[in-house]
Length: 401
Image 1 (cartoon, rainbow, N blue to C red):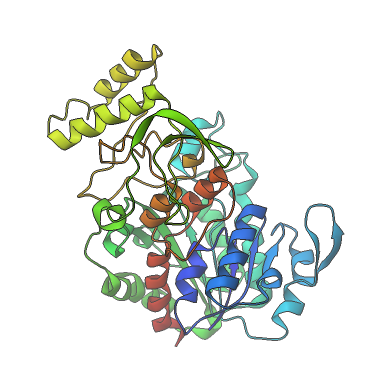
Image 2: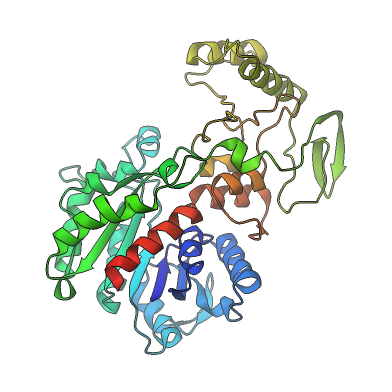
């Protein structure tokens, strides 16, 4: 089954499909260069795709006509033959992808003064659907955050899902009537992280006689067959090398280092932390490990923050991962700081590394992230966990075949 990945990021969603021998990635499209570089590197080194530089297209999906037909000498994106030439007459069986979720997320709407109503990312689904209309795949997969079910762009009169549904129907496809059924708790699918996602599957009208029945069966009967026992933080990261505070600042490869380190595991390198943060991390992790639980309430965490920093905050800044539970959601925000992803071992007194974030997102260890630390955290946080994507890919074969 040939597929195209739109809004590919560093390839979390396509990785799950690539791991299945029944699928073949014709092309991936992504506009952020660090993600493009990482995906190309991974496909070349681990999937044997020698033409990864051509197959992973660095371009803005909103420029759909150029994306399809090619472009020359663009200041930001160089030149490329375009999807049409790259695909070279092959059938496109499915299109997968998820537009950037910030405009739909509850957190994003709270932070934005206008509730993200004017954010251009609200309407990136239109670019996605233009490609669906052009290539007419048997089905498409549209992934996003649960906040998409309540987002109201523009003047706020209509839910974005109403706009999306209308666009999909006008394109000759059908999605399930009740999109609440399209929500997934990824802890039920072997992902060691509290993460919920909406997976909208669209079926082409002229190929499926009873699309609602098929979709109902897919969500209620097929996907649950791929559920898995809950995985924990311990399952995901406990075997990785430990890093402990040294009490001094060392300079390593141009970076300040506050902990012991080694280079045995790619991307497993401790972030620099101040003495104050190390002290806070140790207090919080010991509190959990001892069972005292003095700092588990929002009020207690805010008081500790004020006591240690002299500042006040309306939200609590800290969260310690629990060994025997899934992690809290791995977000793109990790590129700014790791205060809400503190390692559960108090002797380490640090936030999680890039490799630990990747493990909690279920990226395979052979995926080596090659950008700077901030970009690596960001692309991992924005990705679809590959283990869930692999189960989704397997489940979709029930419809495709």
